[in-house]
Amino acid sequence: QQLDDCSNIIVGFGQWDAGFPNGYPTLPLDFEKEMLQLFRTLSSNLNSKPRVFLRSMHYHPIGFRIAQCLPEDWRTPFTVDAYNLVLKRAAQKMDLPFIDTNFIISPMWDATSDWCHFENIVGEVEATYILSQVLDGQQQTIVPRSDL
Image 1 (tube, rainbow, N blue to C red):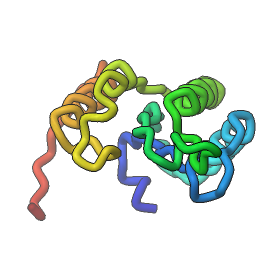
Image 2: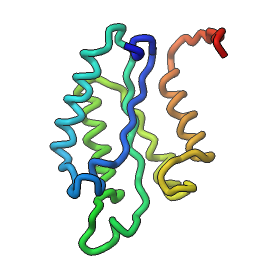
Image 3: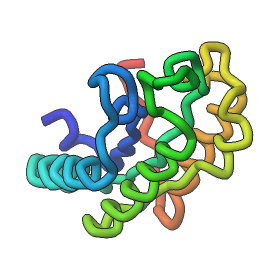
Image 4: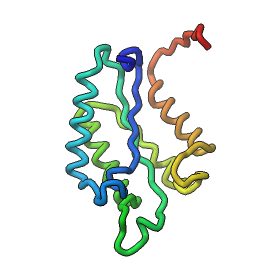
């Protein structure tokens, strides 16, 4: 119900489907089915129909779970690339805008303090780019909030 007050929703996913929590990776075709079902559910539960954007998935650093033999984690750049292709295809099928930030994140994917979350300048650049894509072509009115 709170989402009905939004004019734009940006959806981004982590890499857990390829990660160690399940003990196996989600196959790309299964991931696509899950994403399509998620977007259908999201669409059917939004009354005011805010614009929904899908953001590309970030790379994950190659740690011991990924690099060991046999791996316990499959969050490699190759797997994330496959998931991003699935996300892009699912966005097209659902007629959702896809915001690809890989040109920002890919060369800097290991430039984080915790190796996962972009709270530094890389994150700021990505957030600025995402905002520019969301606001592109929109007439924006800034309404000051009285509760701040």
